[in-house]
Length: 100
Image 1: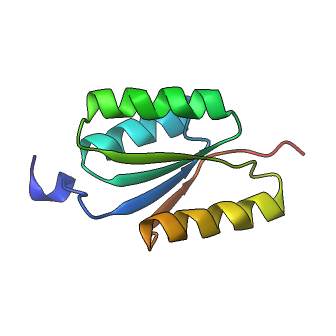
Image 2: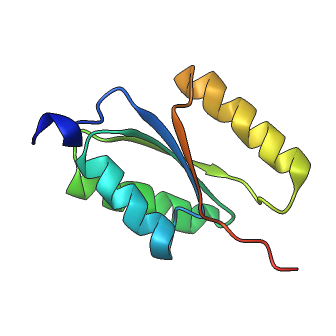
């Protein structure tokens, strides 16, 4: 892996990370060595994605949090939990959408 692909030590939050574009982002970040905080509303899907990411990137540090981004209190609690778990946050991929 070249230096510009090396994200070891980088903590990334991905909202909507358990499917679609968010999952694609998570796969790429895991392969590059990033620590991943994955947010999704469906805990069983979150768990399956964590297992999948650990299979494609065995040294990846991935943790899923059940967070509904349409709920402001849940977002605040989710962010607190991520900072508590990883002690920092370097990037956020705001991928989850909220219907109007």
